[in-house]
Length: 227
Image 1 (cartoon, rainbow, N blue to C red):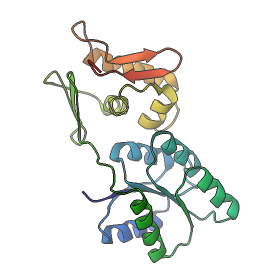
Image 2 (cartoon, rainbow, N blue to C red; image 1 turned 120 degrees about the vertical axis):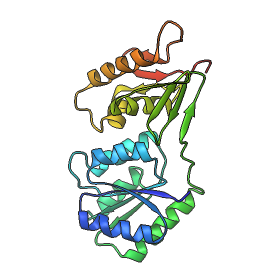
Image 3 (cartoon, one colour; image 1 turned 90 degrees about the vertical axis):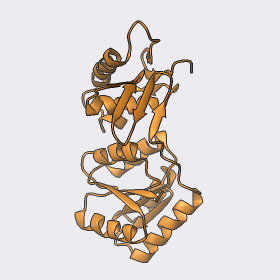
Image 4 (cartoon, rainbow, N blue to C red; image 1 turned 60 degrees about the vertical axis):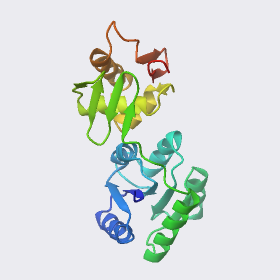
């Protein structure tokens, strides 16, 4: 499987150039034009590496880097017009693996991408399916089967279920779920509560143990049957 790289930058010309350079080297590229879209893309495509701008609408790169580091150690290269020493140090201490100032040299960017990927070894395998005794989830096809029967989920319900089962047996705070599934905290915990209730109606009944556990005053946890 080719390495998948996520490029998050609101400058269309820059994004097109980076995509061209990466694709010429055989990488698979996913793009996002703002921080919130970048967070959603990060969760859905599970990239081997992120190339990240800092000054973007909706959610800036500093916040996006923080959210990524809450859930993943995938390498992050900051690519920004903010080239002062202060920003570089802030980015590296904030969890970035490298920091490149714009305008950048094409060959240097490609070299740093390869170095960052080499440090991580083989890219983590992206699981295309999840299975336990109750559920089968096919991530690429957005299909969910409950005890062998297909159930229909809305896109938002599917994103929430994916976030929970990819972190099975781990308690996810409402803020984490909002960031991962909505891309922001807009709407607050009520959004999560409502969609958890939708999922429960479709996944749970008196024949099955509770799959989604409520952890009072914190968040939710997916508990696989027998897990």
